[in-house]
Image 1 (cartoon, rainbow, N blue to C red):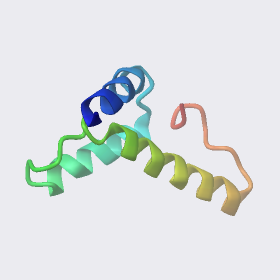
Image 2: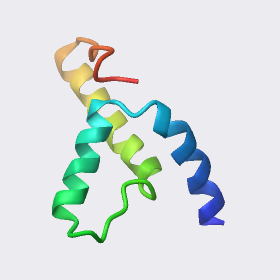
Image 3: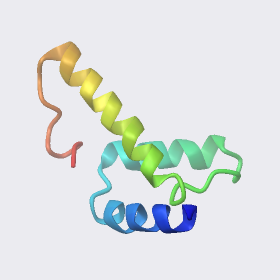
Length: 70
């Protein structure tokens, strides 16, 4: 069941991966010691980066530039 839930998120997220998602993937690869697969964590990573984006917008009152937000 997890395989089915993760697969669509990976497919839809691959085309819309923004700089924040790429940065989080890089951190996971570097500090995860090869134990974390960013593609399997795509859904969770989207939630984390969306939450961070929302916190930034709430704190500053400014929208995140399109370059960094999907």
